[in-house]
Length: 114
Ligand code: SF4
Image (cartoon, rainbow, N blue to C red):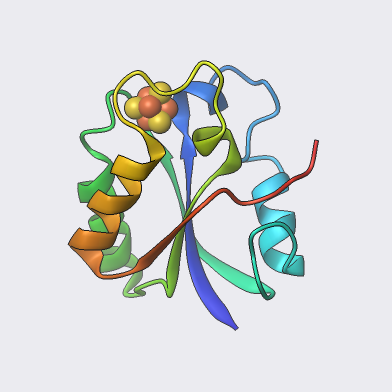
């Protein structure tokens, strides 16, 4: 079973529109649905905070403190598919930064639930 980290858009989550912190990302990971190719263990769940500058350091800290390097990092569907989009960086840029810094595959999007 893969170990995964999930990153949600904090600006979205904090506005209570039905954020990924409730069940969607967690259900998709546990059942292997959406973009999860198999049932996966969520070993960390991070909330990006505008303007996103602390995201990579926070991911590194989560790995250090949990003593667990995830097999994959997932950017949540709310982060990747946001309309209007993130004003600070694209999902591609965020994925590249995380993949280059940690050497971990970054998947864009978690679930297709409504
Ligand atoms: S920087 Fe972008 S992805 Fe991160 S919380 Fe702000 S709007 Fe969301």
